[in-house]
Amino acid sequence: MKRPLSSTSGSRQPQATYCITLTSIRHMRGIAGSGHSQFLDVLHRSHAGVEDRVRTNKAMGLDNLPSASWEVNCGWMLAANLASDLDAWVRLLTLHDIEDLADAEPTTMRLCLYHLPARLANHARRRWLRIDATWPWAQAFTTRWNRLTQLPPAT
Image (tube, rainbow, N blue to C red; front, side, top):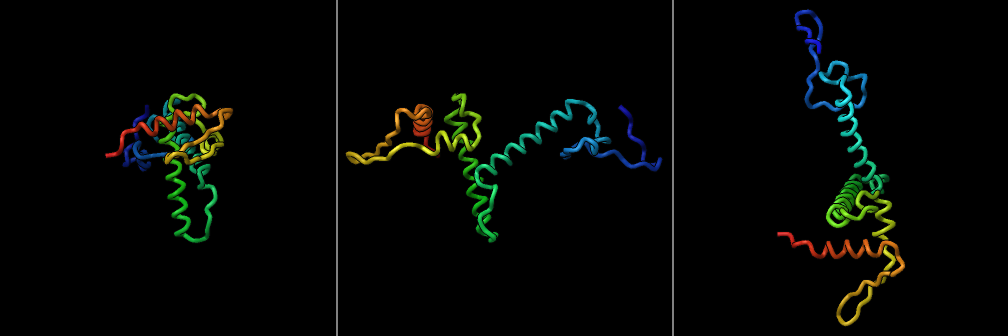
């Protein structure tokens, strides 16, 4: 590793190695350790996680803002971010061991579990959710529902 040049020789100081997020390799020439493949891999993985969250939030409603009004769009963004957080928590708490749905995209979750082919019925002062037995995700939904109802109350 080369030693940094002193400021008396007329060249500039090397860049700091902390608080830096770069996506272009050509700008990383003066950063200590930037030539190592591990450094580039960690940088890429960090950025890939951010890109995954942005893509997920766009699929949950942030792709198109509904209005020209700032206040309406702020409310829309809040609702879309809440939906994204709820989707992530539901998958983490209830679908962690179901192979197809643990890391599913929002469109898959919407197709499989949120748009439910069921009928809500009232009988004998109780509500019954009648799910079609031939629906392929019936077991996953009932497992999810049972796990959600067994969570301890918030204190």
